[in-house]
Amino acid sequence: MAIIIPANSAVTAAYDVENSCRFNDGDYLSRTLGTPSSLTTSTFSCWVKLAKGTATGQYDNKLFQAQGTGGCAGVLSIGGDTAAKIYLDQHNTACTATEAAYRPTQALRDYSAWYHIMVTTNTGSGTAADRMILYVNGVRVTAYDSQTTFDADDTVYWNSTAQSQVHYIGKDFDGYLAEVVFCDGQAYGPTDFGEFDSNSPTIWKPKDPSELTFGNNGFYLDFKDSSNLGNDANGGTDWAENNIAAADQATDTPTNNFCTLNPLAIAVNQPTFSQGNCQSVAGGDWYPNRGTFGVTAGKWFWEVKVTTSGGNFHGVAGEQVNHYDDGGRTFAEVGHTAYTKDGGGEMQYGADETTANYGSTDPNDITGIALNMDDKEISIYDNGSIIVTDFALDDAAATTTVFPAAAEWNATVQYNFGGCSAFTVSSANQDANGYGNFEYAVPSGYYALCTKNLAEFGG
Image 1: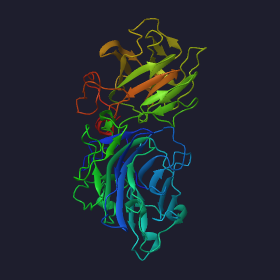
Image 2: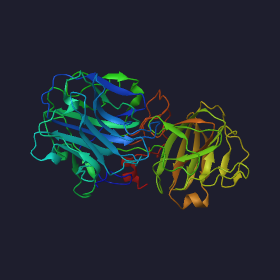
Image 3: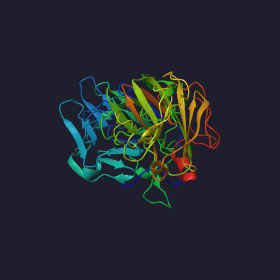
Image 4: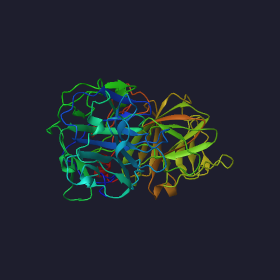
């Protein structure tokens, strides 16, 4: 299986994807289906970064769906269940049966990665297995738990007007979508949308799709206009935005992947994640979590806002995130060095805690965390003003891979790693490379945790 550009790769894509759109369960784009160019031939392509939401069913996390008045549908989804597999179904136009149904064996459980998923349909093909083809990261999927193929010349439901279908993008989906394309009347291959890197041949990179033939019902969503995220860049009818706002435009893309929270790195007490894995809601115990990107070198910056809290610690941790031990005042792995606003702004250092109050305990303040892994230090900012300068990391943190981390108690905590903030950013501060979108100025020499910066600074 090909992989997307990894966190520490120096690979540069020839085509740069500028924006994606963040979806939470209940957010979606919709439009009424027009007259198709073809009932048998089409191509759908999108780039996907999953987030952990409340969805648990097979048909949650819908990437693309056509829903008719008869209750039948053509749908491509990634199960929100523990299987986390792709579900690809096409009903017949009479709404009496399923014409085609694919259940790939492969699971998609990586919350740190971007996946490229595309479906080509050509029911006129003389080979049944070629009438609908699924690709993941440029590679044809051939391993299936079950597979029901189209009969010859069947109508493809998601491009039929038999029941006045409505198209949906991102319905019941939690995560990010980029470069969403539908070509009506064309059976394209994966190399029309991506390419393998010549120096790293397992890495799949996006290509510019704007010159493809889109047909009557085709569309291209590039999400470049924050005031109109339903804009069809191909010039077709714009999509209706349902609970989608300008703040959902992201710069977290398949060509510059940003850090988010990692739902897989939870030892105990799973928080509830939302806002593209940038918001964490903890219950009445200590809930640890950490970011998707770990670093051993470089200088890195992110922001945190606590909207409600019974207690919280923020800072860094090693790869294993353990439970906070309140009785012993130790932080285990969470926060080799950490900062708490609710406890008066003290710094946690291993099993020790300073007695100095480092500033405001207002939970609506924005905490800036500046991690210096070159000198093994951390600095803390409160609403843009530095309150802790060059606090030394302990020996364990200084000699291991370090991740953004937190432990929270009855807390709603919003994070901004720069790619898409969980809280509203009223200003537009970027790092010196022009990446990220922060409320307060990024300290000189510090950078957002994204793949382009990681490739340059060896994090």
